[in-house]
Length: 262
Image (tube, rainbow, N blue to C red):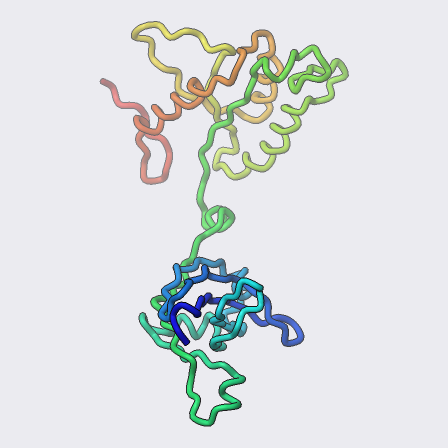
């Protein structure tokens, strides 16, 4: 077999029901290469083996053909559990079952070199919460006029005389019911801003955000419809919290320490 005629690619399959094999990942094709070096692959454990480290896996090296009928070079069966036990640079024999049946002296069609196999744990958001992590976050509501006049039923800010909540209030209520329970104080913090925000005078200190319970937050949304800015006011919502993060020290218990006199 000449290098010009070989276009190898590596396919990872996992065992399914009733002896079927399902393709999990396929590498790039290395054209005209007898000793291909494929790029590393990064797969989640669930997609690779349904989080079962002992589920059989098949690593199949094929000769790629433009017609789609790829030719098998060799394959091997393994599992995540076995791969994790391999040392760096381990060589695994690739066997072609047809050639093994026909040729008495056949050993393998080559070696698959595993440079490394590492299982990395990436905690999910729920893992952090279950581990006792407390959240500190900011709620900023877009009161811009681009969402329509609050007196118009087509506006996202529409004040329904019947008291029916608009889409903003519905979203605040739904999200707030979830996230306020994740904070230690169960209060939704947010900057005390006017819409539009007032011009800052020279030497005037910034107003740091104060805790807002969910019901006051809903009340603020209802009453801040008198003057709507033409576009989102992101800087007034971000700057106070940037200042708070830099300047407000924390104690060992995570609570804010009182400000020191200057």
